[in-house]
Length: 220
Image (cartoon, rainbow, N blue to C red; front, side, top):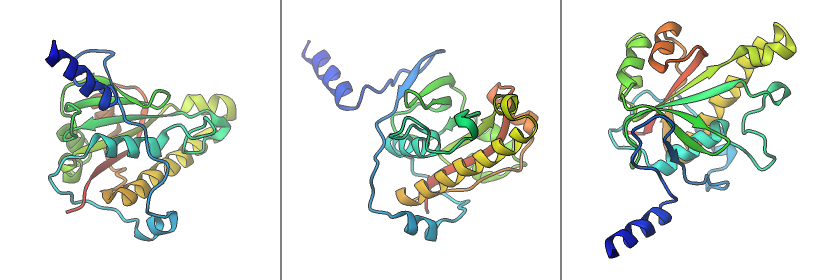
């Protein structure tokens, strides 16, 4: 009984994370993001760079949470951190987790409404994504790969053909958010656009259009 009580207390202290992620519909609740740091926007812009080599150290769940929130999470206005034409938000973020403390390896979908990860598969997809990315090893070696996909119809249904341009602009906003947040956390990332669309879709099991793969890891 005492052991059960201590386990419950530990889960509460850790924010109710779901460790036993092993089936469809299971989620990993992410810790709340921070809204202030000791790194200014000006510093992050000045230090922003594309990083293709990472240490072997795992990311913390807090770091993953912060990067995902910066990319496409909810802000104080109940909008998202990346601007979107007509506030339509046609992008979806998938996360290939390899080495993140307390998060089992596998493929997840980011739920920005609840700031959580939805389990898709227990397969570590980084090697497959690397193969789909013309063998770029940093996709395989980073502890996490963030894959950004788009449903163009969401935006073109309102704006016609020009909506495709709006979606492409939006993914650029999202990518820069990841870059700047990575700098603020002492992490590195790189925007990867060279990949086989069909192979990436196959890895993710989606019909959406993949636009970015962004490895994230610690600096060496």
